Structures are given as structure tokens and as C-alpha cells.
Image (cartoon, rainbow, N blue to C red):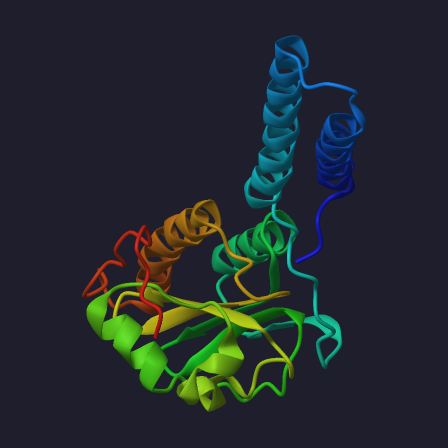
Length: 227
């Protein structure tokens, strides 16, 4: 991982200070106590600068680079949606695409894809084993690096090259699927936001569909599964 410019400057200062202390010791005519004390203090300061540079890199890691996804940006919305539900889906998907690292938002409910927005895939998404497990357990599943998971073929209908996926259940009858621009891009706060909107959507979808209250409410994504 590349080191931030400021951390590199601190690292260079620490190394330079340590080298100068060694040179000063080697070229001194005599090692009297004042010189030894100054050398010890200089060495300590140089080492502290080195530690600051290393810790700086851990505190401020570089964000993973966005990948180039296969597909065009657009919106697919089921034509027979209730007006209020369509407005809710439009507002919520816009917020997810602008306020989180999501590249695509897909809503699948009772066998139908009601919404796909962002970078569009092939349009024939079907929930598989991962989505079913999320609905049965009522917990979000975060696939932080999709290429590492053997069940990734389930998401082949999403844009090609998608690096990260979050599956958020909508009770036991649907899922909200988010695809991210880069591996490990979704933070805990992003998952909390998704879970909150999913709760609201689940009730609204059940009301519009005439099915009453959903069988199970999605749980908090504070500790999502990893598939």
C-alpha cells in the first residue's frame, strides 16, 4: 500500500535525523557526556518520527480504487408500481447511489425485480442460495470481495466486474441488493442506513401487495454475515 505524502515526509525526516546522529557520533573528536546525552535524545526523536509515519499509514489507509464496471448507467422500474411506492424507490435509490459507495441498487420482491438503478446488468436477476440464506436468517450478508466467493455466479446478472455486494433481506419475500465500486467499500454506517431503509420498504411493499405485515423483519446489520 502506498504511503500518503505527509507520512513520507515524516518518515524521511526521521531517517535523516537518525543518520545525522550516527554521523555526528562517528566524527566527534571525543565522546564526552554532553555529546552522548544529545545523541540519545536525537535518536529517540528520530525513532518517534519513524513510528509516527508508520502509524499515520494505519490511521489513514488509502481507499481502494474504483473498478471499471461493465454496463451503462440507467434506471429500470416496474411499470405497474403504486405511485407512492415508486416515489419511495426513486428517493431511496438516489440516496444510496449518492451517499454510499453503491454502484447499483436492485430490489427483488416476490419473484419480480421492481427496481434496478445505477450501472445496469443483464436484467434477469434471480435470488440464489446467498439471498435465500439472508431471507431465512433475517440478516444482511456482506460479500466484501466478490471474486473470493464460490457462490458469486448468483450475481452474474449484475454488472460485470462488480467487486463487492451487500444482500439486505426484506422479510422472507425479497432482498435489496447493493453492488459497490470497490472491494470492502461499504462501512458500518452504510449498512445501518441500508437496514433502516429496508425496514421501511418491507412494510410499504407488504401494504401495497396486500399481504399484510411481513413474516420477518430484517435484523440490524451491525454484524453482517460474510457468505
